[in-house]
Length: 122
Image 1 (cartoon, rainbow, N blue to C red):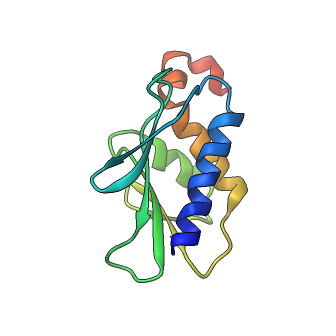
Image 2: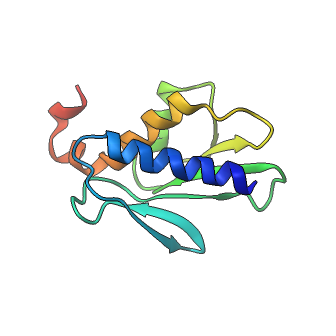
């Protein structure tokens, strides 16, 4: 599980570096989970990662539940598994769906930027 979470962490940092407008990413703990914020630009919504406590062998990428991010991800990537309106669920036995996750992470890291400038998402 540790290796899976570290790979997810690396994907988040790599995506932040490659995504215009994000700026420096801050890693901190929120609710005891590794969390990623964009304090420099305030471009994004917080992303958290952790193992799913109630499901052995599962881990997740968590997003703010009062955004439409997971709803957007569900429409774009119906093949992914979701936990309500707050997470993308991943199975430790499966290969990381990198392309889809990179896109979802980029959308989360630019969420506020895109809300301020809707033409950016087109």
